[in-house]
Amino acid sequence: MRQSLIPVLTVVVAIITLWYAAAVWLNAPWAYDKAQRAGVELSVSDMVVDTWSQKKPKLPAPHQVTREIWKTTVKKKITSKRSLIYHSWITLSATLLGFALGTALGISLAVGIVYNRTMDMSVMPWVITSQTIPILAVAPMIIVVLNAVGIQGLLPKAIISMYLSFFPVVVGVVKGLRSPDHMQLDQMRTWHASSTQTFWRLRLPSSMPYLFTSLKIAMAAAIVGAIVGELPTGAVAGLGARLLAGSYYGQTIQIWSALLMAAALAATLVALIGLIQRIVLKRMGMAQ
Amino acid sequence: MNKETIISARDLSLTFQTNDGPVHALKDVSLDIEKGEFVSFIGPSGCGKTTFLRVMADLETPTSGEISVNGVSPEEARRARAYGYVFQAAGLYPWRTIGGNIRLPLEIMGYSKADQAERVDRVLELVELAGFEKKFPWQLSGGMQQRASIARALAFDADILLMDEPFGALDEIVRDHLNEQLLQLWARTQKTIAFVTHSIPEAVYLSTKIVVMSPRPGRIADVIESSLPRERPLEIRDSPEFIEIAHRVREGLRAGHGDDV
Image (cartoon, rainbow over all chains, first blue to last red; front, side, top):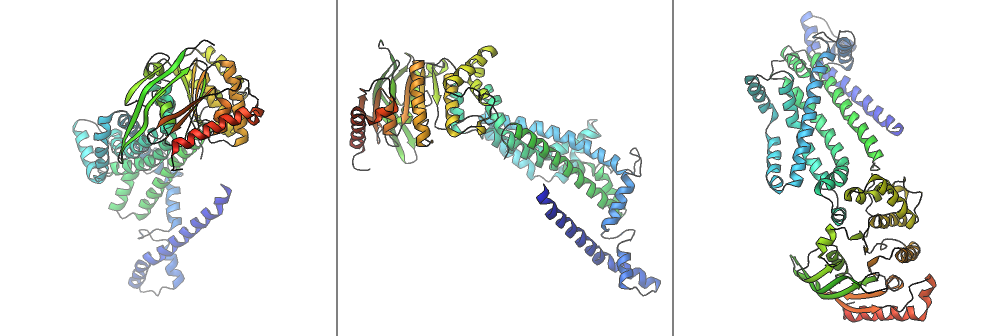
């Protein structure tokens, strides 16, 4: 952990530096534009200050985004429609439900694929096909169809989230359940173990490292799914809605703060799975 | 000891169909193993010694011929849990303690909790691993892991022990020690042991009967009844009888091999 601190900090500093430089470069035309119309000569330092403090910049500077996040998280009541925490919670709840559904679906499909020859031959191609369909095209239809049968709110978004997150789980868990070698399976056979016993005692524990790796990818996919699911609902609430509303009104600062919030949310969730992974695998004697 | 045939093979053949054509892993193999015997199978790779052991264990199905284990087919014997099988690698589960690994077959076979605990204690004692029950496999040396895997095969009441090069991956000093222990264990438990190896000294030191096999097709080249006493200190390996038996094994291997050594 300690050795990685300096490299990580270096990268962070580099990103922020580049970001400020890019803000100057992208926002300068508008600064010069304003100055020309006002009939004033703009010095370089005035120009730089202006590019970092515009109301609707092409690229907001880091401190503007930070201030916006501060304003909409700490300074706003959580119940307020303008609180980023409120919107994050909307997205988070859909993400977590979708992730849970996706994991359950993924594991069930994987078990079916490993234990049933027919499923092995038939399901996997469909699973792969499902991921080649652009989710952005499917999402509105899922929302509309479910709305027609009276399902709205959290569930449709969670289903879109599930649609994206079950895939890595299927692939990883199939590989994990098949990871015991011939010798281990023969060994079970010499004990005349039933396939249920082989599953619980050998296949499932063996699949744990694969499962956790898949869950991390699935979690990142789930949050993307939840945000995509919020776009066609008319931008009522959630980080996706903030992104959409921000782009309607050219509120770039709002877009960036929602983006950063989504990234932070994803990073936290993935790190949380990583932590559980480390604890579980260590206790299982399988830590790498 | 009264004679009672435990494993009996008659004209046993097994042919694997591969992309390069059929491979005759076993061809017309006939052999009887009596109760309480220690039989070693020795031969170069491809001679079918492991395949023969796997047929006994019902891990392979012979193409033709007959084989009985404990008077029934290998499949029935396997279902009745008539044998313990020790593989080349210890194959302990990293997520289970040594005790937990030994308990694994007992759980599968439905032994009661109390019985499990009692058996784990007993077999750990038997392989001199008492006190290691709570340790995890990675905390043990390779030799100790293999002893734990033998303990696991002994934990349930199988009278037959099938061992497929169990000490093949271990260094010679550890191997000598384990061989000595295995003989003591065999003397104490009265099990019938079939043991695959490619080491001549190991085969001669351990066995009451040495089956020399040769490849292409896999067949029995010679069966040597050992004249050595059952009680065998390590020094016996310097005795004239030992050297003579080893010589006969080597001759058998050479004869079966033809010129392609």
